[in-house]
Length: 165
Ligand SMILES: [Fe+2]
Image (cartoon, rainbow, N blue to C red):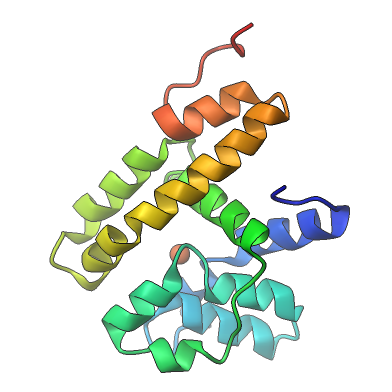
């Protein structure tokens, strides 16, 4: 289960809210937002589990390799797989404008915005199999929990008005 306890749910919500804080001027240090965000949150005394989820959000270790910052990212251990999947789902099924999108559309938008030969473009191409797999794992859990419409939207991007009966 993505968040089997209320404590896990709280961690996931906090990580989802803060995961891109490394883009802010205040947090920016290396230019790698996952690492910068995690360091910034740690400096504020944010709970380690949230900091670690932010550091590794959405396969950030692969982007760290592209940027030559993989050793630096080792400052932070990976989070629990279920919460890591949950954070990928949150990141990869919402557009930059905050609208629900499918994981396919989200990845395509990132590739188009940055270009396939950019650091981010190379990273997202390498990360896509795991990003897709994580979204599918969470979607399956949503289906089992009766949230068929949300699961469908995350994979297809065109949520039905009401869940199929
Ligand atoms: Fe991010």
